[in-house]
Image (cartoon, rainbow, N blue to C red; front, side):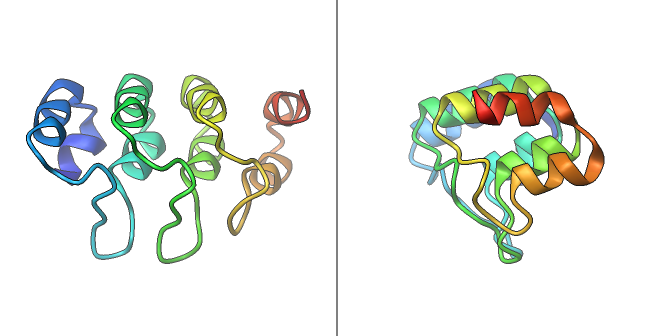
Amino acid sequence: MFQLARTGETERLRAYVEAGLPVNLMNGTGDTLLMLAAYHGHAETVRTLLELGADPEQPNDKGQRPLAGAVFKKEPEVVRALLDAGASPDSGQPSARDAARMFGHTEFLTWFDA
């Protein structure tokens, strides 16, 4: 399942979740399907998982959130999808806001302040 999230196989993931797979399923390091899809830049998969009830604020074992991963990887469509779903730019370690500052992604800082 985690590989499906990493590679953006949206429809296969949807089918599994609709058949009963927990949408907030975590791997051994606490990464959810949403975290992996976000980090790997799969905006459609991210939106689908969010529609199916994925928690945009679920941290992994390091306290990282999907939004910070998307900011780090500079994935604007994913960042927008997570913000639209209520993800906080100030949650996690580092937060998405901190990641944007660290890597000079000023466009995201503008979005966070809007």
